[in-house]
Length: 276
Image (cartoon, rainbow, N blue to C red):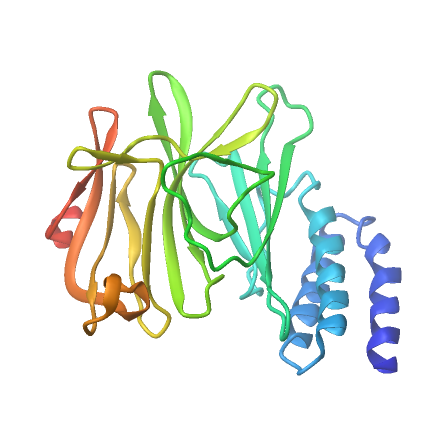
């Protein structure tokens, strides 16, 4: 424990120095983050792990404010999510704190390039792991964000307004993995809003699409274009009361959401090969 404490003191002292020398700063930050994430593979108690995550947060907190954040990516960091929009005007950085005896936590930075060349606009979100269902009948903001790791996004323009479709994954329930298709937009004062009543399943409309399945299963959810998202169709792996999602998995058929006439329309049993 004393060794870990000394190690974290060194990290704390080095972190300000990371801010000084341009590319050298990014290289130092890369090595620092790789070392910190690798330390988490050791069986530390939660207090020690929280200290390491705090050090990671300090480095990322600096990184997202740099002028090169849209031109740079940490290629060596497996546990840090980094996605940039096709036009390089929006970047999302996410990661999660995994603890032994306490709920984990999600961290998310959303960085937007200012149109007038001023400082980038940054939204910081955090949320503890939550095993409750993600609501599909409401919007979320940064203050009540459900928490997820986002791994892809595409722009979606409707009536001359810009929205972003984001794909995410949530490990907050120990028995059920959730994958999410959500809509992200920003208000005039910079508030981030998740959800829009765009997802149509017949006559039923939802603010987002959420797929829940067994943690032992694997499900694909991906864009095939800016206006098409394909994903594995989920069915019960074995009979269960109330269609319990912890017993669901893919059946090797494919469904999709397609953006048509201002809505994302659910289509069942599509041929994903024709979407490539």
